[in-house]
Amino acid sequence: MTDDQNEGPQLVPRPVDAAVAAEWRTFFSGGGVFSLPAATEVNRRKRARNTVFLTVLLLLAVAAVAVAGVLLATGSGRALTYALLAVLLIVTVVATARIAGIRRALNAVRDSPQEYIAVSRDGMRFAGIEFPWTAIVGGLIIDERGAQYSGLKRLTAKIMLSAGHPQVEMLLGVREGTVRDHRAHAPGAVGRVFFVSMGSGGPRIPLQHAIDDDSINALATAARVSAADADVPIIVSRDPAVIHPTIMAIWRGKRPTAGKESNE
Image (cartoon, rainbow, N blue to C red):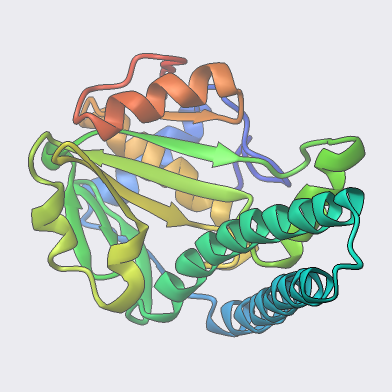
């Protein structure tokens, strides 16, 4: 397909250019399937780095507990020392949980078949699992590339990125009461990126570190065009005011309306 207005470092929450959309429609109407393999080597490197972070955090937690134990045994500790050790332990536990969550996404890419994701006129296929548009209530593409942070949040973002956090993800919401049926077909760790709430939900699909970076925008554009033709809203945003209500809707098996855009 030809380049489009969304090519570049970041997606933007605006309609797909009409000429580009027409090209994708022609492609799909001819039976075309836009299929992408998993970026296995990138994923392997990110998982190795993630392992390093988890190991360091585990050692810090063990060290904090050991020091506290020694101080208690010898009676040489002070209240401030114990407070600092407690803070270190809490921070370490929280960071470990965050990085372990990132690892779930990395492991899902590892356990996916050679074809990681595909888009056709009738729907999407992720890790070998079919998601026809008739089964989807809506979707959300979160693109954090180019986001600017300051202070502690900037440091946290750098650590998360180094540990393999994907800055671009796609969330799909399936019709109410059907998410477990879809998850039952998930291979290996792929099932762990499905979110289930009160019988509804869907997969949270990593795109960055999962497919080639140069293909992310094309994949997103293809999905938006095909979904729009099936009257399925796929919203692009990194605005919490849009993201939160959209996630709440699709995790309940409902059609999202926040930030709804036209892809015509």
